[in-house]
Image 1 (cartoon, each protein chain N blue to C red):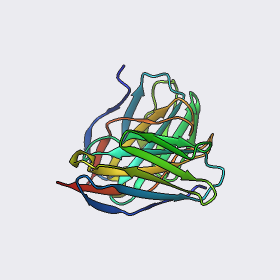
Image 2 (cartoon, chains in turn red, purple; image 1 turned 135 degrees about the vertical axis):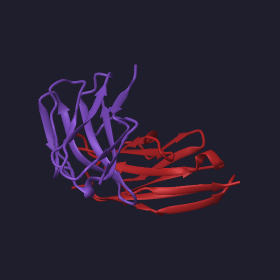
Image 3 (cartoon, rainbow over the protein chains, first blue to last red; image 1 turned 90 degrees about the horizontal axis):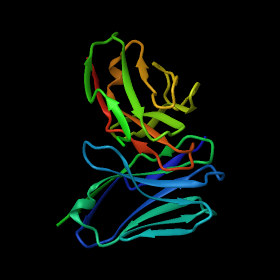
Length: 111
Length: 113
């Protein structure tokens, strides 16, 4: 089955800096890669996703890049703000199967 | 449109007790799933369903049962609670299996004494 590795497990940045979280996956047939943000005590919420036919997707301060050859994808957050502090999860899946999540990255943005 | 609704929000059980965690969605989603979240372990899939009458096991199914008699409801049953099942449980639904964003409920925090 699919195995998703996520790094780093914790990340601390200063407000205004960029943050990058990286994930690798094992199943070359995976074709959907969502990212979720989970604030303390709350549900995971989708922040951005990318499909295998796209190499990059951007939504305001967040972007995701996908390298199918290397089987890795990354989340980029620019101009970080304290409210970006949360746990971020990547996931990978191929159609017809269940999502496999990484173990999460705890991001702390300090003022 | 309430999305995905989970009940209860909190529950404390004694070892050996049984209970059902409820999950309902009003988005007419075919795909529903249950995850447990433990510190440092991410979200692990317990069971999932691709439609009414169809269920399948995920990564950590032991000790749990599910059924899907309607599109809207997907209850998770703990047959004989064990301390190792202390966790936060999330139900999720999506339009398509593995192809569309998943919508999560607010979670159930379960403690087994």
